[in-house]
Every structure is written in structure tokens, then in C-alpha cells.
Image (cartoon, rainbow, N blue to C red):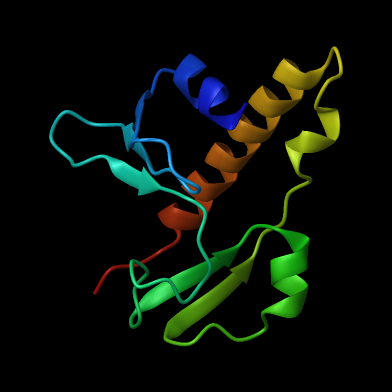
Length: 116
């Protein structure tokens, strides 16, 4: 449902060959490479190890991961998982609302980041 929501909001999304944990490539720019999105844990080799900010978006991670190795800053910005609406008449609207909420709040967070 998340991929359908992102596509409906105008992003181009392609999927790697089906595996236990497929990768999705989300295109958002004509000049920047796509974002690679897939389910992973914080110490996955694709994640940075130094000079990054850790944004904890689920309450479980925020409560249970007080320390993220290498992170200069840690931000707990939690969201109610839209899957609470799965198989209900409100499902599409709930996913859309949550997507827009996350996008709005992340835009604000990143507008506050100062580059050196």
C-alpha cells in the first residue's frame, strides 16, 4: 500500500526482482539518482557509519534504540503506522494522510539542518 501511495503522489517506483526483501527505487528528480528503499536494520552495510542524523520514526525503535552508533544527532519523530487502517474503507485516505504528514514534517526537519 505504501508503494501505491507514493506512486499516486507522482513518484516513479521500480522494484528489483522479487526476493524475500525486494529493493524499491524511488525516482524524485531528473538529475539525482533514485532513492533505494528496502527493509533493513540500523547496522545494515548500506547505512552510513559516521556523520549522519538518525531519524527514529516508529515508537518501538525510538524507545528501544536510545543509541545509534556513529549518529551525530538522533531525532525521535514517531508516527502511527497506517497499517492500522488495512482492509478498511479508510485505508487509501489514511495512507495518503500519513505520507503527507511525514513529508511535511521531514521537510521542516531538513530545513533546520545546517551544512558546514
